[in-house]
Image 1 (spheres, one colour):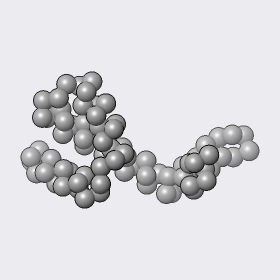
Image 2 (tube, one colour):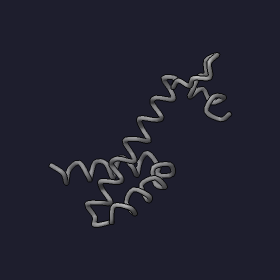
Image 3 (cartoon, rainbow, N blue to C red):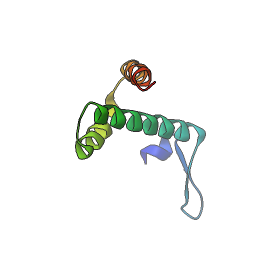
Length: 79
């Protein structure tokens, strides 16, 4: 489907999936967003269940500009 047609994964003859370079880049970006947003919400006092659920929602929709601003703020506060 969508991931294969988008060039994010390859599927070999045995049905095994592999990430392409662009797929790995997207996965790493989403992981960074999820991790940072979860930690940021936790530091704001959001409970563990909610911070993870909200980070899952936010990581897909937040703009690069807003994420970078949150990241800069969070990293400065953690020093």
